[in-house]
Length: 56
Image (cartoon, rainbow, N blue to C red):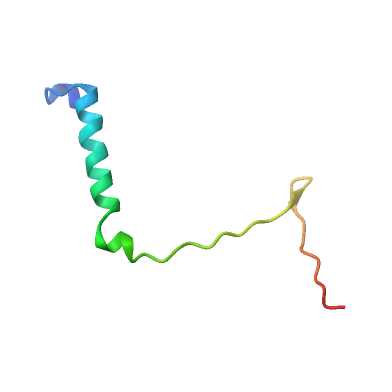
């Protein structure tokens, strides 16, 4: 427990860590990052079920 050796309580350590994470995610680089794509697949018996095409 390195935070204990540094003279911090767990509450102080977690508060500092939360501030750092918050600042990192609010950076200008984070605001301009492209949004991810979401791919949803239907599964049956442990395998992906292929989508039925309506091109008949």
